[in-house]
Image (cartoon, one colour):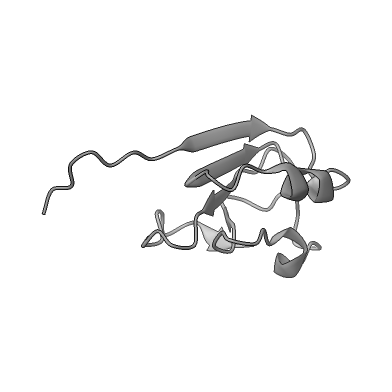
Length: 91
């Protein structure tokens, strides 16, 4: 099945540590986005999932939780999606 005239709005932000910026980010995010990527979150295993949930989006995916670069990926809740990479896990 091929969809015609489908537009997907994608945004990326290099946040350089999300720890003290998440509330401001979550309040200001454009709810018209379909996919939102955040790099340089600098999260590790000590941060719980519920702390980074954004209403309207799926739970964020994360590539690596080593406290360094780390990429988070949010996908609009109404978009059907599968886990993109086997190595990715939900925050």
